[in-house]
Amino acid sequence: AQSVTQLGSHVSVSEGALVLLRCNYSSSVPPYLFWYVQYPNQGLQLLLKYTSAATLVKGINGFEAEFKKSETSFHLTKPSAHMSDAAEYFCAVSKNFGNEKLTFGTGTRLTIIP
Amino acid sequence: NAGVTQTPKFQVLKTGQSMTLQCAQDMNHNSMYWYRQDPGMGLRLIYYSASEGTTDKGEVPNGYNVSRLNKREFSLRLESAAPSQTSVYFCASIPGLANNNEQFFGPGTRLTVL
Image (cartoon, rainbow over all chains, first blue to last red):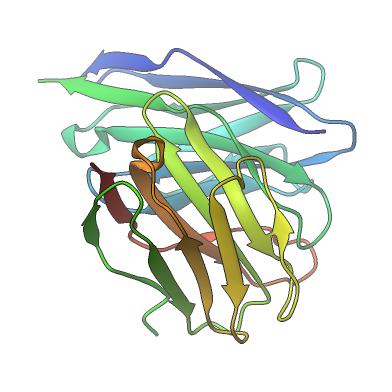
């Protein structure tokens, strides 16, 4: 079975500061890993995904995440926060083959302080 | 392409009433999913359909039924609504291609059961 744990249900950073959102996974097989973003009153949008190619994955809006097998982690980072980054972020895991359902973390709400 | 569409956007029901949430995708995706989102609990899978003609239970199926009407449409039915089913419901689909479990989400249906 797969699962993800997101540390910190709420994270606040100042505009221009580093964003770090933590995700640890548990998987019985090599995983696919995803980060999704949800803006207020909207559906989820894919930020980036790891599918066993490069361990450092770059996504949209300047976000990136690094797959670390030894730490079972897939933390999301952005060097400089922008006000428009305020949203809820979800980490998700699936098995590494097709048509497999995703298991989501409980989410981290990111607040940007002007 | 409209992507994944959901109707209605908002709904208020009384306890015991029934309703069907509609979902359609125009991307020729094979697999479709229904989630509910509740504060602090992330997204939980209700039912999914790996392909046309098949449906399977997810994590929280009690009180719901689904129909995969054709490849495009996947509906979720509440036969006798309860206040515990107050939630935001998301439909999602995936292409079903090798090495791609990226899910595409609809905008959600906000359901309140009084």
